[in-house]
Image (cartoon, rainbow, N blue to C red; front, side, top):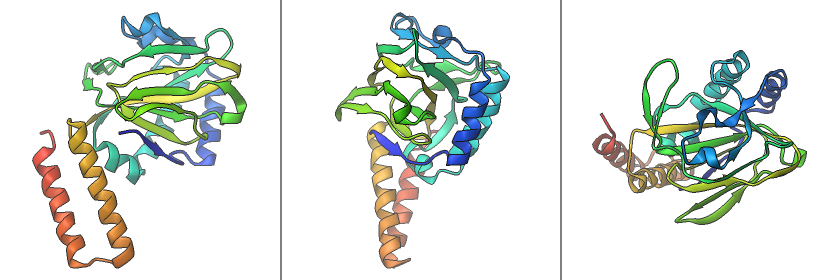
Length: 227
């Protein structure tokens, strides 16, 4: 499932993150690349323990925690602490690759299975040319370039790339999610059911069928959720 989640960051939060990143010292993006993706990766990234990364990460995490759409789509068990990258100048692209299946959170040793990948755009699309996130999966090939503050959520198993940035700079946050529900088909069904329940409640209120469907949703989630 490929899902566009609008306005994860408010306009004010986008400006706060941009102000923090404007003072950052960027490093070679290959610091978090696996053996295959390191061959294709040519961008810049903030070291995960750098003070600007820590400050900006707190803003992103606060925004994720209040996003109902993110929660119902991802059903997050663990969120890998958000990272930040920059594409522009000579470090301007990331060729076709697949994200590592398991990532270790620096400093804690905790391992995160990457069920879902997320890119949260910080630069506005008119500020740079190129830089589309191209994702290839069962839904076809999709080129994604979103408004600042918007996020794309997609399967970590997808082959994806970032097209060369030919003007300006593309700033974004990226991270991975281990879901409570590992199987993507089950996760998609739960998402579609939750959205249908929400529409039913909005249109008709707390009628008996909405209550019954809500019970089915939670019982399926209880059955499929990882311990």
